[in-house]
Every structure is written in structure tokens, then in C-alpha cells.
Length: 284
Image (tube, rainbow, N blue to C red; front, side, top):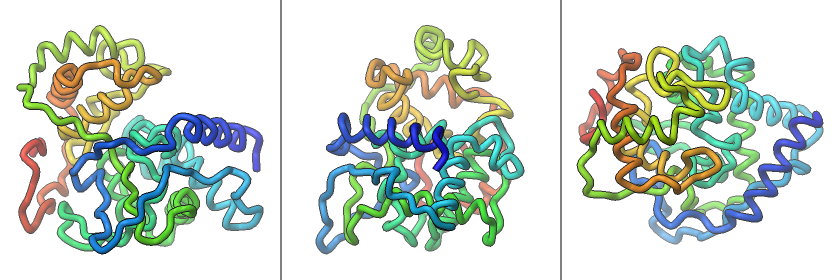
């Protein structure tokens, strides 16, 4: 394994084992971010990502390493399939190892699963391609793509310690529940106070953070385009390194400010929720 990859995974894994062994107590109920619990007998487990030393030194290991690179540097390794300036790790923080930000740990055991937005059973590869089309405003990877197989391999490696029937309670984002009425004007003030250093005064990103609206950000079909999802993510993770330093109301307000700014359309949205049940805050 290359030194940068090994060092990066070791650092992230060590920090998570030290500080995040117990999953967050509340998880979003949105289909984009929540696994379905085994109704018979869910197995409760600790958040326990595998050690980088468990990556094999064979072809499978090469796939896992490529999958890691696709997540952390999607602009470079997946640029053919990306239509904006984001990397997968902008939402799946720490290469999918962070328990508060749509972690990849354990989720491969949940697929295939029924997806309400699609109105059908989907595989893990289907879910990855949905992210490329929506969050990355790009195009799906071919089913036989080496890079799609690599991402699946990486997520399966992160899930190897999960026994069948595990509840995966950290999947998604800790749910933010509030009766607060969104105030986009206050959201703009919060953004100017706490977000511009990383995301820029125009929301178009800096070296420290990604663009949050406009053609270089996620399109309206992404889960993050929903105010409830964005607010939960902001509350749990932002500002980066100082998570939980915004109030619930501030998180809702700044998410409203961000998601009322212009962004790319998603033409295939006409096929979403074919059997009904579309959440109220979907922006289309």
C-alpha cells in the first residue's frame, strides 16, 4: 500500500476508534440516509471500521485502494463521470469513515434494498450511480466499470466487520428535529459568520471547502438539496472540525439559505417516487 493511503486511513481509523465507538443516538429517517432495520432480531454493534492492515495485497486490495481514491479524489479519478466540482468525500466525510456523515461502514450488508425514490429494489452499485447523477451532477458509471467495482469493493471492505442482521444505527446523519420556521435571512447571516471561510462569500468554495450552489455544486435531485437533510448534516458536522457549534435553528436557517440559491436541474426527476410518498421538502 502507498504511504499516503496508509497514513490517511490509519489516522482516520485511529481517531474514529478513539472518539466514536458509540453511534449517534438519532439517525435521519429519510430513505437517502437510513438503513432498514432487521424486523426480526437486529444485532446491535459498535462502530468499528477495519484496520488498513486488513487490505489484502492482491487484486482485491488494488480494487479497494482505487475505491478509496475514487471517494477522496473523485475529481481526478472519476472526472469522466463528474459534472461539478465536488468529491464524494465532501458529504461522506473522512472517506466514508465518519459516523455522523453518511458513513460507508457496514452499509453493504443492507443491499439490495427497496428504494422509495426509485420505486424498486436497488443494489449498492445502483445507489453509487444515483450519487454520481445527483450529488455529483454527472453520469452513471457503466455496470462493468472497473471504477464502479472499486467503490463497491471499498465499501464492502469497510463493512467486513458487520455481522448479518446488524442494525447499522449510525447510517446516515443524526436527525435534526425542530418546529423552527426557516428564516433564510438569518441563514444568510449565519453563513457569513460561520461558513464563508471555507465556502467563500459567494458560496462557490475555496481550497478549504466545496461549492454549495450554482453549476459547480449538487443538483436539485440530490438528497442534500432537501433542507431537512442539509440542516442535519450542517448541525452534525459543520463548521468542519467544530461540529455541533451551530444551534438547531441556525442549521435550519443556513440550510434554507443554501438550498434557495440557484443550482442545476435534474431532468430525470420526473421518474422519482413513482409510487408516491415524496417528502415535503423535496425542491421539485
